[in-house]
Amino acid sequence: MDGSLLDDQKQIHDDFWPLLDELDRRGIRLCPASGRQYATLRRQLGRDELVYIAENGAYVVQHDEELSSDVLDLDVARKVIETVRAADHLDLGTVLCGKRSAYVERTDDPFLAQATPYYAKLEVVDDLSAVEDDILKVAVYDFGPAAAGAGPLLQPFDALVSGEHWVDAMSPTADKGHALRQVQAALGVSAEQTMAFGDYFNDVGMLDAAYWSFAMDNAHPDVRTHARFVAPANTDNGVVRTIASVLGLR
Image (cartoon, rainbow, N blue to C red; front, side):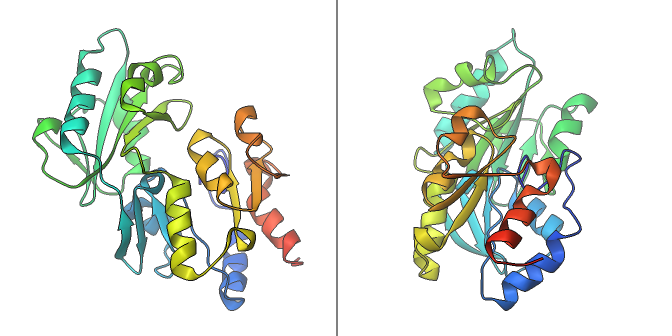
C-alpha cells in the first residue's frame, strides 16, 4: 500500500477501481498486503471479496473472516513496551496491535497524527501492558529515522524496520511472504501465477514468494535486489500501470 499502490498523499489513483473490476471478471484475486490494520484496509478498499494481508502478514482476512493469524507472545509484547518506555533518549510512540483493536497510551497530537491514519479501530488506554487481546504486532513510531533509533533499540526482538519512521515487532514467523504463501496454497495458485509489488524491507518476503516480483522505482535499493522487475514509482501510478500492461489492458 504505502509507497506502492498509494501515492505520496496516501491516495489510490482513480484508474485502480476499473482495473479491480476487470481483475474480478478475469478471476484474478487481488490481495492488499500492508502493515496497516485490517479494519483500515477494509475501510479504504471497501471490498469483502479481497484477501487482506494485514499487519505485515500477521493477520489474513477475507469476507470478514480470519483465514490465518500469527500472534505475538504477550510476554514479548510487554517487554517491547517496557523497552520503548525506558528509551528516554528517543522520541517514540507505541501502538499495540490486536485483533479487536489497536491501542495507544501516548495521546499528544503529533503522535496521534501519525498513528490515526493507519488504525481505523484505535483505543486510548492507561496502560498498554494491561491490554488483553490477541496481539498481532507492536508498532513503534520514531520521530527520528527509525533505522538509527527504534530499529537498533528493538533488534533483540527481531523487529523489522517497516518504514522511514516505523518499526514492527511481530512473531518470528510472521511476515508478508509467509502470509502470501498461505494464500497461494488456499487458492491453489503457484508463485509463477503471482505478481507482487513492494518498496520497503517489510515487502521482501512477499517479493521472494512471487515470480512476477516488482520493486517500485522508488523502492529502497536493498529491496530492489529481491525483485526480478521494476515498476514505475508510486507517484506514477506504477502498480496499476504495470498490471494493466502485463494483462494487455489499456
